[in-house]
Image (cartoon, rainbow, N blue to C red; front, top):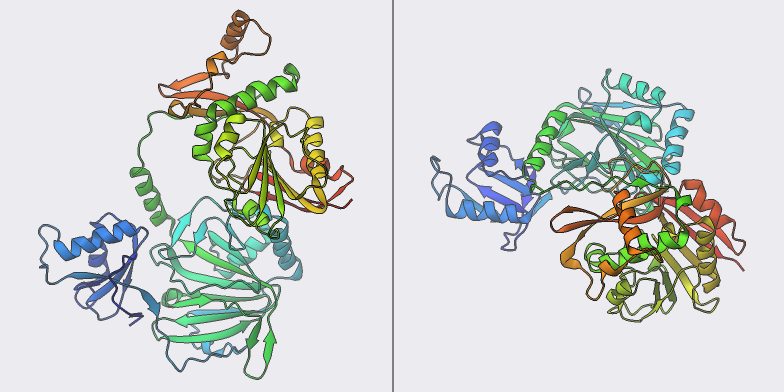
Length: 582
């Protein structure tokens, strides 16, 4: 038995133990065809010579549906009676023999006894190729879209149960990250086959990799592990024989597993600072693990087709193209009034309904502050970054009254109606100043720099300033990515009028001192201005200046009172952390 079933539970999980169906009487294809009638996405665990299977579902509601089905009725025409098949909510864990060794070894001989299925190659890469991969990883951190210190190339593989494969959140092409020389070397090792999914893991001392079965429906019968940097402790669990082998894999060593053992041996990495060897205690060091996989792409296409099939049809496509503009045709005051302030006043409720959660990295930086510290949020909007925790004292500032009205419910917070280029607060006040997606709405370089200077002025010496802006360099295959033809653009917002801000009369909003007749004529000429898309949507335009990489860095670096502590790319935004030094 590959798994141990423990403790029947009445708690709803996403795992079922199904009794009455199994390999003792059925073959794999028959079980697959039977389960496919439910039209759910799941993984099936088959156990030799048993009349039972485990089914793990992506969604608990699918698990509940199948549970009720098995315990109440069966498909019409089935030869099984209700008493033949039953389902129980269950949990799964891997069973390991009690006599399995707990210490680690550098002796690969136990693996090499499976010489038809396992190959170990030493000194796989020359130093230049090895260093190039590690340098790419360190230099391209902006390409990482998971919280697990990893880069996925080709496909994004989410290592959970059931397995999930995405074409987003990854580098789409292998040669975008790896050199042709490296790919040719790896292809030769795999007998002229090139892996179509590669994961690079940063295996630092706080990172653990749990045992996970990788589906034979998704993955071909071959996998390989390449250790780079320093030696790496790895555990290999033979789920058929219930045996675990702990090995320390030397750097620049490739371990290749193929055939039936590909899905019967699973790997894990311990989260330990010290590794117990047979004769000593070894200090573990940071290392990197490159995993090569072969995805059965025809089977993945079926998943994609199913997702598209189940999508709710939309009434009309919303055009998301950004319109390039010539800023010399506008004053900065007009851009900021008509295409920023007036728009956000009008869409405040709708904006608050869709932008209600702070970004994870922003939240992490806030939580690094000491209890009782003062945090200034410049351009706080609806207050999504103003935590309701009593740990800090917040000051929120925005020039939209209607967004500030949404932020009023936040505790331990003072709110100010003001412009970020002239902050009405004393100097050296805040321990941390944040400005998330704000200064890219300002119409000139001088105003953007002035806004940053004001944030620096209001921050204590030794305090930090965190700034996020929208990036001109957009990463493909990420939700919400755009393609920009200019740094100065109008970005559409499709306003649902049921969220119309109470008390805000958008019909009364004009263009400063222009006469109404002239304004109407101009609206006809500018098709990108306010254009209804369908009955309940109105297309509004917001002004943005999208920042190139060097632009934000140079702007902040030109301010004498601060030094740049960190500069990074985060989900198609540039982020920078400054430290006030005097």
